[in-house]
Length: 540
Ligand code: PEP
Ligand code: MG
Image 1 (cartoon, helix red, strand yellow):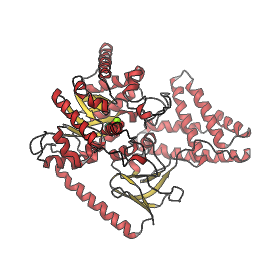
Image 2 (cartoon, helix red, strand yellow):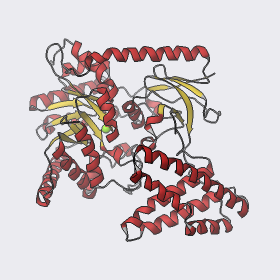
Image 3 (cartoon, helix red, strand yellow):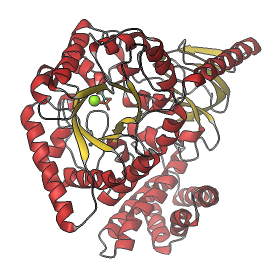
Image 4 (cartoon, protein in one colour):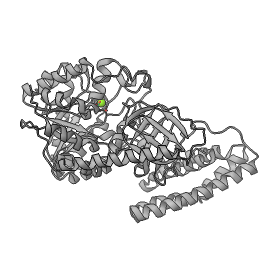
């Protein structure tokens, strides 16, 4: 048995097979055999890719439908494209390795497709890239596509948010990483998915652990590879005990979240994707307090269109059947990165071009979001909020832009609805200016993850600084009190959507401060409702 200690990022017990996730190497292997050997390697990789795509085709057809499966069929056809194969063969004859030839041909063909006028052919650029990437990964032994085709525990050096959103969520029993911080967006995603996760473990990825039985204890921050019988039975008992505790919370399902003195604290859920609404329903959330819309932008080659955003928002809004959905506009930047906006690398990305700053500078990025949000608002109760606000003028500019968008939609005869307008308070500047900001908006939602980071000047991503990253710091709590007071005095409501909202040791403190809503990972709702319903405290 191999034991490894780490830092818990989310509690729970998982038992399953280890599945090691290796990132694609940024450099292709330079070692290269004779052209004949490389061609043979390429031909073998092509057959492996065909088998994988065939299996994926069947799975997609059965689970999603024939139309979606046709995308995979197109990719299979590309494996037989004579021009593509000829290009690979020529490059190999010229001395390239099989992987380099697949990559270069992929890039050439993808650019050629992207430059075509025909929309259908243009769209094929992504498919060519996908197929080539699959071939390269097979040839380099870094493939992740086949990873977790059945339930397992994902073990990785580190995971970025964009890698995480592309993983097959349904099959992940737990995350274990060697690096990472418990305040990162990957940890946040694990909480939304309700799966135990550990960061900063000493687990050795080269230790041949792939496929071995593993246990993750997200309470103690420990994982075991090849657990002995005693450890296994202790963990199974712990799992059963947890299930029992969860079952006892069921009495709070469907109940209003109201204290014994009658103060209502709405309990809502944080989500990243439309598919998370299933967890929201299971968790019994009273609404969605934060939809991190930037997750719709991650793990893709192009930005989602207005239509795609509208579809995604509509799915959530309709599924919530009239309950409020707060959509946060794009908060790209810092650890959430995409290539296609062509944003420059920055020295201090957390203090850089991110969140609302991008939207206020680039209308072409802001417009499709706001149009999609107002259009989705025609189908339910939608609120919109803006991240990384520091100044009143930003809010005034946003409001002008929103009015322009509504007018555009009206003139075009496109149905749209009204959306309550709020701001995230997640910078010390916004907290200090909260009395002024409260006059401009209809609600506040406090982002305690960034508020802690910026108040304490501690990078939330930095694993070495976790000891200093203290959301209970008196400075953070003083700002939280100040924000709630400003909201109350201006007659607007305020909530907390950062991770601190789920901290059960502070629930009563938040009630006393006068918070009206807590938005948390869906699996935490019932536990917090119990605390609220049993509480005797009142807003001070
Ligand atoms: C926050 O900063 O607390 C927040 C909710 O936003 P994010 O974690 O996505 O930065
Ligand atoms: Mg934030």
